[in-house]
Image (cartoon, rainbow, N blue to C red; front, side):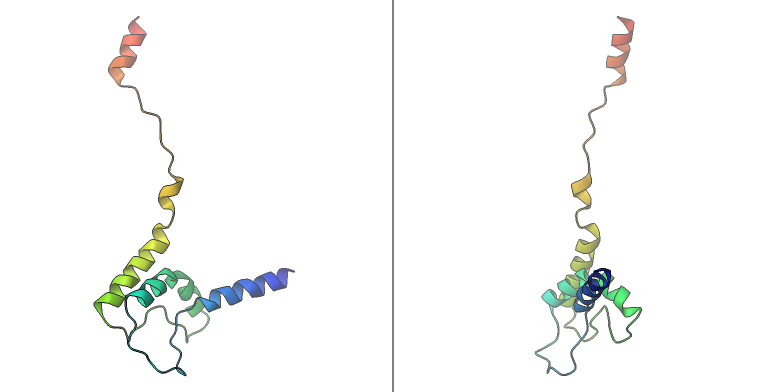
Length: 105
């Protein structure tokens, strides 16, 4: 069971790796949407690239600014994710003048 889980996680991570397929002809340079996706999976692709040198985390043959914008939005979305969802609101603190008034009475 443990081996099948490890294999499943490995395949899942490898399936997210960003790399060009040399067997498929290009349909144009990658644009905003591919940059967005590759930015989002960049941390996972980086980990895979440590063990497989054919995996890249950034497409160098892109169409310029639109790919870069998508990549930056994707990577920032990955790291910011649900960070704001875990914030808890604190109860409002009483002002020091209202606390002093209660102490005097």
